[in-house]
Amino acid sequence: MLKKQDPIIYDAIQKELERQQNTIELIPSENYVSPAVLEALGSILTNKYAEGYPSNRYYGGTANVDIVEQTAIDRAKKLFNAEHANVQPLSGAQANIAAYFALLKQGETILGMDLSHGGHLTHGHPVTKIAKIFNFIRYKTLPTGEIDYAQLRKMALEHKPRLILVGFSAYSRSINYKKIKEIADKVNAYTMADIAHIAGLIAAGVLENPVPLFDAVTSTTHKTLRGPRGGVILCKKQFAAQIDKSVFPGLQGGPHEHNIAAKAVAFREALQPEFKQYAEQILKNAKALENVLKQNGFTIAFGTTENHLLLIDLRNPPAGPLRRSFSEASEAGKNISGLEAQTALEDVNIVCNKNMIPDDPRQPLDPSGIRLGTPAMTTRGFKEQEFILVGKMISDCLTSPKDPQVKQQILEQVKNLTKKFPLPY
Ligand SMILES: *Cc1c(COP(=O)(O)O)cnc(C)c1O
Image 1 (cartoon, protein in one colour):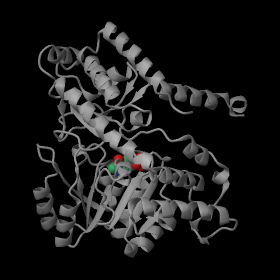
Image 2 (tube, rainbow, N blue to C red; image 1 turned 180 degrees about the horizontal axis):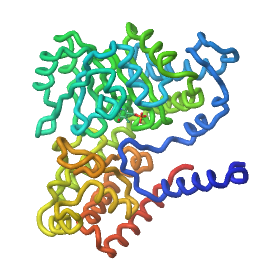
Image 3 (cartoon, helix red, strand yellow; image 1 turned 135 degrees about the vertical axis):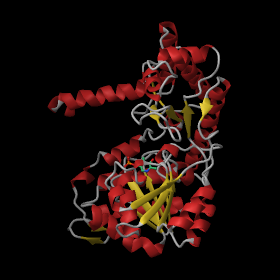
């Protein structure tokens, strides 16, 4: 139908499907949803208005969407062992903003993680509007890669924040939630974890779950959790009414029930035993990728990975011929930049993103690192063996970014691998 009625959009979708089929996807925040999730997302539920919450709506005709939303809520609670869940946030950013407004008054202080040390824009980066409403201050990581808990404690005691926030989009180490909670209790601050990146790993039980310990936990549903694009908030019962009011009517209008249906389907999938195997494989694959890259002389920011992602610090290219070709690759006569690395990899159909490294001396649009993750290709069936090949291809590509023969060889390998592990669409 779409093909005939709107060929521009149809063709763009077809081309995007081809692109997804034919590339190795290493952006750690991306994944491939199941056909069942896609079916729910594309359903007629998009036609329905349902402002309010199940059994308490401002519209008639909501019996069916009530089932949908209540099922999503029940599954989210079960998945994360949560006392309360709100499945309406349209995305991760909205979930965070809603949580801040639920817990804090305008002008109050939030202590969160520095963006260049792995934090997220929505954690108070000066370019965001939310940074004008709350007073964000930031802790950092140590050169060894751990969060600087001593600095965090010192800042908490000095500034008495109302909220201590943990969570990241480019940090590869574990978080000591207990330690954060102890510090927060000392200064009478709320605790919030933004688990957008690692929600699937937490749901599967392969990473520690902050939900039973923290006051509020926000997440996206489309990263490791492998659901539709959206957000979710989990919290203690005592904050349930505040959180719900903050999402609707505080910030949003009618909930996207087609999207909530797709979230429910994804939550059910994440409750199955196979999802635990998936999450375990994500971690094994990240380790395999780390090992190859280290063997080839690359520097991993934060020292190592304990989750699904790796940040490569390109300031320190491997010694020998690699160092020389990095220099050749850069116009500034220095090492290859994150943007140059991202572009060189995209030329061989390996997709990743440039990223800031801690206290990056370069600019955000051309930073010193690239970020790699294993969730998407693990969904397609990649195991350690395939990720060892991926690591070698990345190494070869960045070592000889201008060698047409190397480029041809990698393109051929990517073609074979993506053909062998197709998408189910
Ligand atoms: C991705 C992400 C978000 C934002 O999610 P959107 O759905 O893009 O709004 C928020 N916090 C963290 C830590 C993230 O990684």
